Length: 319
Picture 1 (cartoon, rainbow, N blue to C red):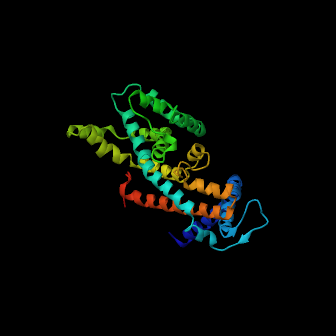
Picture 2 (picture 1 turned 30 degrees about the horizontal axis):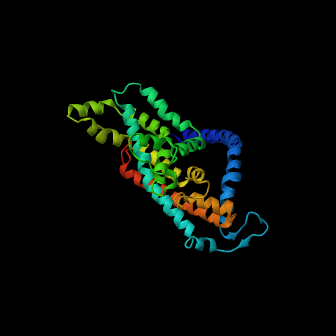
Picture 3 (picture 1 turned 90 degrees about the horizontal axis):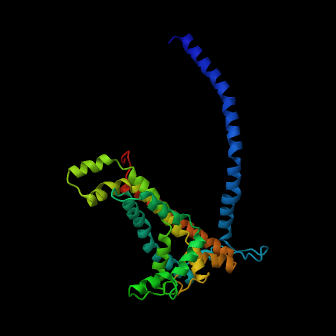
């Protein structure tokens, strides 16, 4: 390239840049205009309230006395270590967490595997029936299960009585209330089951055919082929289950009518937070409990995403 050609090339590039500059600014301006409702909503309803709630953790603020805000420093954070109700709520949440997570992961896999089996007839009808439970409003489902699990008149205990088994008092026993909660939770796994089923149906059939020629049976195929290839959807369901349990409130609140009974077994973390902030109207300490929950949920989420590289299948391979 000669000097004249290079100069001509640079002049052309400069002209294109001059034309592209106003166009880029024009597009950027209209892009900001179109996303401005989301930005305004995020600022007004998410970011600013989060910042204010963080500032509130350093105050003694009663919602009935908005003009009487006292700055108390780190006293709310120090109270976390001496709060007996917080320890009870954390223990209840942790115990139920350990019980519920395996069921929330295993049941969708088992149901999807049954619906994906070749000999099964009427798969569409079963899939629809299993998913319909997910569409039932949560409060309605809780009230239905509350009647079904009634220790004296519930359908579950009547069925057990017909086969010679004396049913427990599901909702008034500290031993049986957690299995009752798991039963209620399994009622709504239709969404996780459907996503798992779709992922199973996307597994290449050539892998099953090759393994059959090598003498692998059904269980071996499920363990060595299906399970590793659906780990992305298992990870997705695990994340949703963890986040859902960190927000667990509606079911225990309705079943116990906000008391946390029996024996504080239903006093989950969010119940304690709700009572502190809105029943006892201690918004300062309530905000502190909210930020503690946020920190724990963030730590668990970061840990799960970190661990994913060791067990979640990636089509592109691992670095």
